[in-house]
Amino acid sequence: MKITYLKKFLKTPIAEKIVGTFAYCYLKFVGLTTRWNVIGVKEVYDMLNKYDSMIVVGWHGRTLEMPYFWNKSRTLNALVSPHRDGRIIVKILEKFGIGHISGSSNKNSTGAAFELMNNLNNGNSIAIIPDGPLGPSMQMSLSPLFYAQKSGKPIVGITYSIAGSFIITKSWDNMLLPLPFHKGIYAITKPFFVPKNASKDELETFRKQIENNLNELTWKIDKEMGIPFIPQGTEAKKSRKNML
Image (tube, rainbow, N blue to C red; front, side, top):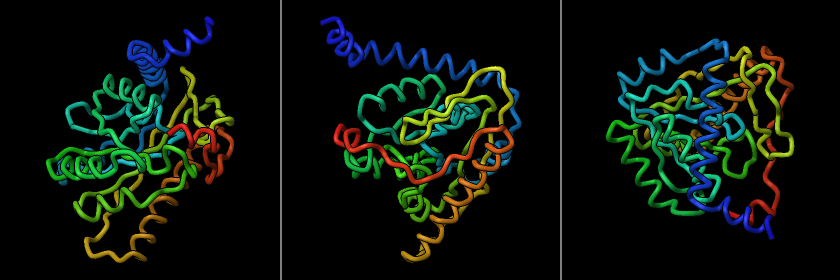
């Protein structure tokens, strides 16, 4: 009986707020105590001054510390799935000064697409996790490329690695769970631009280039931080898929 009440409580807005606040405090603490080597952050803000907005992508397993170096003076809105996990993510993002757009590949996709494009055209950057919410891990969908093609805005990939982190191997995305007081690397890829007249085959070429670039960067910094090699291509279990 008590377990049933606990499960019900965990689905309430107040529980989501508590969990989100705790997660934010922990991630902020990790960020503050990590001895960072930062690669490409300055260049990103220089690029924002030129293009006003951009499309930020990153892997599902590396989302926890992704918001840490975002400058709150520049608007960034992230595409977040509307299920319970997504609502907790929204609470974390809000505390990092990042907004959200509710939607996914199978819920509110049309409305979310319109809102994403509207943000880009009005000088607001957007963030998309192109291997979420169910995988395959570290494999990019075409979605970010369509927005880049239509808006003319650059795509940049963000990744990080922190020494001593746990890898949640039971999770389809092999989530990296960082610990405080370690060395870390926060790295951003070069910008990618997709021509407006790019063909279907050309879009696939760009998609693969961005995917490979982000993966190679992730594997490189993982090796420097002593993190075991994490392969791409895992997916969520069927039971998890049926929940969404």
